[in-house]
Image (cartoon, rainbow, N blue to C red):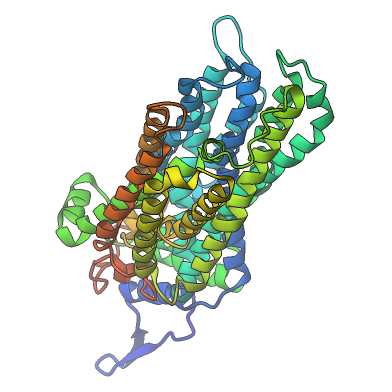
Length: 544
């Protein structure tokens, strides 16, 4: 049984003996207080790294296709470019899979446990990524179709990582560092995106001689290049898998869903002091009476406006943000080519033209990541626990509205000359910066904080899935609209549409509460006094 530094006993003068000063309900609150007030430790760092490596892998696998699709076009496309439907298919398959995975794994993590599901989603990612790298075609199936299936399956695994990593980070974190811990986890997305471009650049440079002397009808070495680029996404996932499978269950799940306060108290003592945990298989389980998740309870909880508006705010804010974030992120190569930034000289032909184009795309993506994406995450890290989530999100949506208006309404003039295109790239980098020092970070953090434990992962999954619905709409819309009136002629108007959705995000942000320096239980909008109503019927069977 756990012991607490501030444990106490009360004296009954009538019976003349000591009785425990903590009821089960008070013991729960004491254990939660230990978690909420704990100093940053090696265990917190381990949680951050284990969850962060997953997000690094997710971002690498999602955004590597941005460059790989150009390579696929040279090898399998007609006229050395993928058709609109083919390009859309390989890019939109992953967000569709994300949507399914976020809903499915979000719900399962609340039903069977965070620990039991953590690692399974990474196995799915590893298998599906490897499947893409060795994909082939036959008389009955086209390789693009095979890749779409594998990327959809990979998307399910990546989708599951969102609620699981967010909730595990949130529930283990101390109140005063929770925002920074979750931001540090999510910031690995920027490094994953940058690494995808860097690895692609290294591969292109390594294959330069082969590309220059390749058969221009089939480009066999470019076929090797995209497979290596995609396949390397397995490596960080394999490294992280063991650590994910051995991470302990969160004490909040053990207390509030498994309703085993004694085991949770013991877990808190163990992981805060030694960074490990132990479950006695022979110990009797002391269940308690606490609110249980059910469809009826779900409707009752979120049917109250003070709770329902929060879910609406987190879900729509993520939806609006991902319209632009994935609309830009998965199409940055197209946009860079559309404005002529880094495009190879028209005098070049054959292998040197292909090599120059691929190299410039890689460099352009590295510039966009290093100049905007990565700094944005870490500026958020500095201010998330002092300034707060809501002000950062409001500021981000407001600035993004202005930036997209400038890029959209001024698009024709910004691409008219080479110097003007550099100004466009600067504005593009600013949008990346304020997406991450803004709603891209906060829409990940807030849903992991504002819901009660029994619905925390489900609520995060619903919010994240709403975002991926926006990503799907953005991809389909971008593919169908960008060539209206000619190749890439409608890109400026698409940016104007993005500006509109950033404006709507300002209003949805008003629905969410400020979460900085507040405990998860306080944010749940549920009375914590009497949350546990006493012991339930004892069960002798060991905890699974």
